[in-house]
Image (cartoon, rainbow, N blue to C red; front, side, top):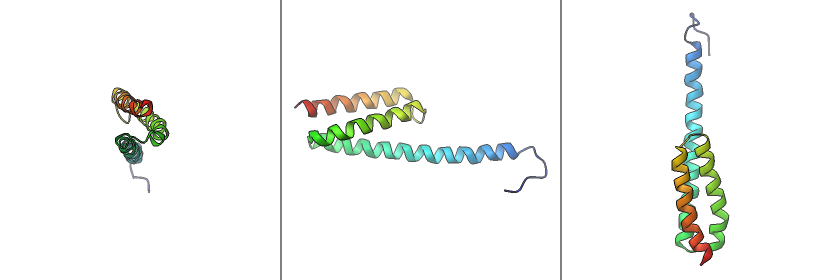
Amino acid sequence: MAKLKTGRHTSSLKEVRKASRRRWANVAARTATRDLTKQLAGAIAAKDAAKVKGLLSKTMSAWKKLGNRHTVHPSTAARKIAKLSRSAHKVIAA
């Protein structure tokens, strides 16, 4: 991008570009995590213990990353992890 005649707004334009890139990265991460959550919920509904074991750690890790990065609120991530963990362990124990 060419420089503006006045150098006043170049930094703000760069921040807009950075914010846009970050937003789309956050949207992609949130979508991937929600997809994992839906897969895990399906495995829990089907009572497939082997699949649940494999997906649980991936899903918990994804939610934890979103919470640590503040893509979602950390408390939201913790609540999702707790709820999924509770229901998954019922299937695994049975």
